[in-house]
Image (cartoon, rainbow, N blue to C red; front, side):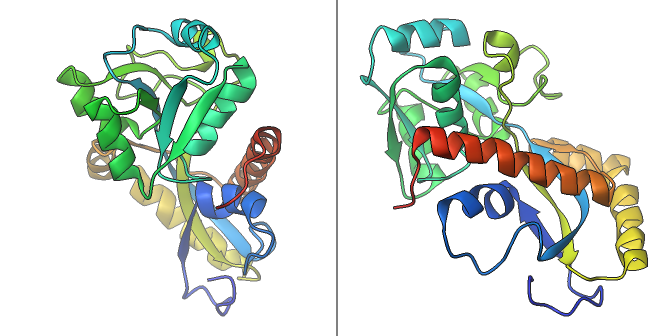
Length: 245
């Protein structure tokens, strides 16, 4: 994608991992997230949530923080691997609250999530759409969502930011990109089509069921969004000392 002809015939999708996390984990990437692409539009944010097994005696973020502080280093959390979209937001929570949790990286999201549901590990930050059916059946407890505001699918669940951790924000996201140097009129035309499709009722209905919050943005807004995510996540990676394995 980064080295494709800038003629508008190669369109790609970038996400929080490829554009905002990986640059801080790997010293040699075959692309530069800001120089090698022409951002078209943020397509959607994927809501995540802080989930605990029902055996954990907490019902709010504040209670979890207090519970963890009373047991430094004794509580585990799972993720799909070092630098994953489950690892980074939990490390962000650790940095912002001062709690000490032990990271248990799995080889993929599914085995980590299954172990939380089974009670083998007490908590993780999975996708909201993945966790919600288990919460409804009583097999998980959702304490909060990770976005800047409450998720549209679960307006009754507070965000971490409003649960005593002001400024906390981490959403997975995805958006459309073209190779750098693509003519501006081509970028503008594709942007208009993305916005048209993301605003169709049938698109919203289908993707909302999967936990996607459709956004749509201008190319400039998406560029600023990527840059802000790179900066925010970089601070967490540095503070937590995260390194690839």
